[in-house]
Length: 128
Image (cartoon, rainbow, N blue to C red; front, side, top):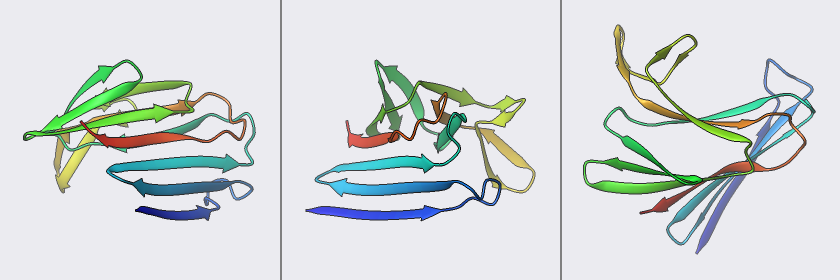
């Protein structure tokens, strides 16, 4: 069975662009696909925030995520670069804040398209 949801919005900071996202579930795999209309040539960044208890290990173009006995593969596509950030201060990236005044380092995957050319990019979540 396949389930799919699609939507689009014009962000407040760039009203001449529109961000299109599709989330699809097929079998046991979830796929998140993004496309930006407008803003040609601009840098695009998408972030996947993980819980502090998650460990992350790169496996070629994919990432193995593990936490409390559960394992998941994140497979990226359509990007120029994927980087991992944890507990960085300038700029602040890779933090989980469970309540006011508490910040715990947590891994974040940053998917980058260097210059928007209208291509689709995103990631798949696959049980490992």
